[in-house]
Length: 437
Length: 142
Image (cartoon, helix red, strand yellow):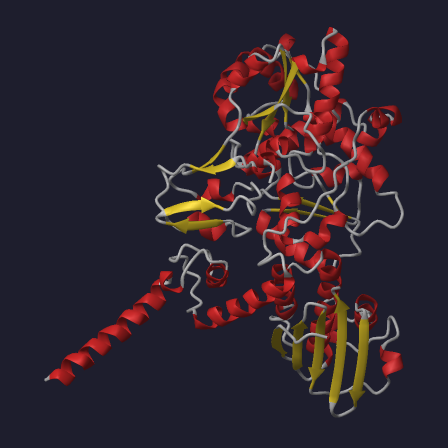
């Protein structure tokens, strides 16, 4: 397999891992195993949701992102702030302050991802007009949800709306506008997304639905916060840069922001990965075919709840609400009004590489062999205690049985089975000792 | 036709809304582990959920059976009654005899049987009042 398709931002720091079972139990795709006292991430199953980063008390799960040093690789650099960045600063009344602070940090220019979100909003509105689409259409904005579907709900792939993420659209616009204004070559410009999550970093190195990402790197909000905060305090009124997105674009930072931007009455907005899983199960059963749109965000509250954000997600959500109100008072046009038809056709907006099922949950490529393995698995499960304690290093008894069948574990790694066996052996030894007398 | 390689039985009780959907969820999980193609998976998902809910809503309880061979997935629902007096009427879209309880939970749109028939490659239903109903659905894999 291509190295790039196996790339993940979420990694393990072996030195810090204690081999506990916290991350094991919280992984939504059962992508973690504890073996020889350390956690291991199964690359082919990981969807970069960052749940393990959140849950690990020892900070052994980390997200690999780019450092500000990477800016030196390019002659010019542009910062692409995700709208969730605005929610990180309490008391902020104008997004223009954040844009100005990013420039002071060393970027040559700043381009709001919220502007990309405006274009995407209009593109999805157009898409929803097409006849005979599967219902509901599923948002493609959260890369973790898209990967979750590839791993756990492959039959729902046709529901994913084939429009690129705001980050990608914004990057194309940013590069094009900058090159025109400064007369430089596209490859001289480095575009860095300011990211709330590892999934976006992974989406840059292993793009979803497109050959190559238009973004060159991602810088974690957590990493940049410490430098940005003091700069924000210093920005004077006259230094502010005008934010040019609509208020709707800013709203994409929180759950339901996308739905509000596309004006769908019959839409469902779900946040939190476990909640998304429950609803996707229902979509799979055709129980929600009366909906036109499903907006799923892997993080609680939407992107403001990303694992790489600094501020409490509820506080951030409130800050975004206020910023949206301020932006709306200044300009209340919708994305559909502000994005022109010409702009819509200027850049590639559609996904052009088909999204395919991931296949990591399959027991075998050959269905007959897979059936034999499944049958064997069921026999093993019947003999296991069903405590789902994780002591064996697999998240549940069922996944332990799966690991045994696949040859990654053996039955005596179950401490309960081991205890029973020791007990039987001890009894046999007593019996043996008695017979000799 | 080769021998059945996977066989699983799920008892489904009448009016047991707490467990409703668990059998079809397990069926889905198994089929995903087998690597059943996405298009077939989706149709089995819909049909198995409908047939399981039918057992909960309309029957006096029964058993849902999953059988998989390399060629096909088969779902058989066999209940203990009460049986359907008029099958033609029961197959009609929008026709439902769901109870008030079921309707208050959002079921009873009268699309259950038509949906099963639409999603399965082979569909047969037999019923005898006082005895029970058997629904047999096949989904081709090859």
